[in-house]
Image (tube, rainbow, N blue to C red; front, side):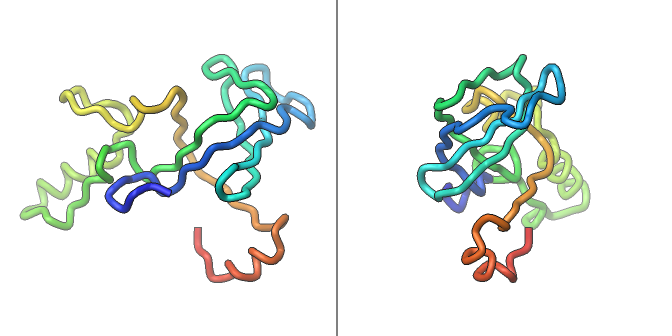
Length: 136
């Protein structure tokens, strides 16, 4: 896992077991099925095949981050007035480079996605019992 000062909340290496095993539903999107090396996790991921091409048995690094800001997401906790709070909130929500010379985590990866993550504990019943209080 990533360091505490980072906005990366999860990272691992995944090996692709299959791609589009249930058939292809969209022309430019494929669904991959992969397994992680470090955390013994299964992953199902939809991705744009025109932007990022992957093959069965290929490995790739995946990181989940709360923000693309380096060194963690800016917070308004140390701000002295409302104007600084608004500025921090605006910077935290921007996922593209801000044009001010600061580059984010997107420079470290070949493919960046934005959206929601769904977690299923169905396949690992023992883990599901331990994680009943887990909120995602």
